[in-house]
Amino acid sequence: MKRILIVLMIVALFLCGCGKKEIKEAEEKQQRFVIEYQQTFGIGNDISIIRDMETGKTYLFAHSGYAGGLTILEENK
Image: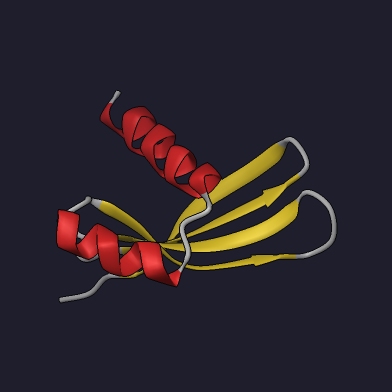
C-alpha cells in the first residue's frame, strides 16, 4: 500500500512539471519528492529523475503513451 502511495505522489509531482526554479523552492519547502531532471522525446514520451529527499534515493521514471515505469537509479549513502 505504501509503494502505491509513493508512486502516486511521484506521478503527481511528475505531472506538475517542476523546473529548476521549483527544485530550489521545493528544497526550501521541504517537499519529499523533487524532480531533478526531465526530458521529453516526441509526443507522450519522456523521462524524469526524481529524488526522495527523505531517504536520499534517486529514481528514474519513464513514460511512453499510457505506459510508465519507475526504478531506483542508485542508493545514496
